[in-house]
Amino acid sequence: MISKYLAIAFLATASMTGAAAAQTATNQAASATSATTHKEGEWRASKLAGIDVYNEANEKIGDIHDVIVDRSGRVANVILGVGGVLGLGEHYVAVAFDKLKWVDQPVTSTTASTTSPQGNAPATTSAPDSTTRTTTGAATTTTTTITTSASARWYPDHAVYNATKDELKAMPEFKY
Image (spheres, rainbow, N blue to C red):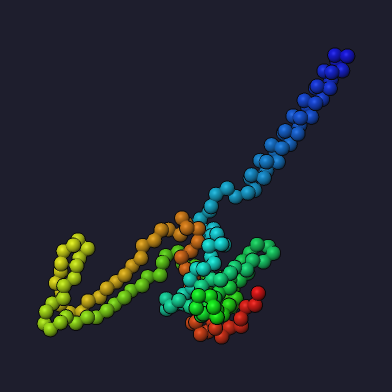
């Protein structure tokens, strides 16, 4: 009778050990195929919506409204919103993803202004070290923007597409 109980206990223990070993092998295989960290060059698709699109002359021509993915998971098209005010009256056009040039650095804006001093008096400007400098002639102001790296953001700063706003508005409208 005792041998009968020992045999049942032995079989139960063996079957539980086999099930536990099978679960461990399955979990290890699943973890080997899934991504665990962000890799350089990967972007969050949710963050692409709203990114500004500029042309080659650094003029804003629209923004990304949506990203279209095919069945295999590849990005087929990017939907650009052109024109409109606060989303009203926007014209949506589909542009192939590979036609956009993605830029991680912010758009550099340079503002140049020429001012003439009053009368013959020289112009005064404040230097970054809180001293006052006197200049004569035209003044030029340059504005630059400092931002964090794109790898920390998981999305590019902006996209560049070689077209004007009018050319995009002339394209056939994308219908959802």
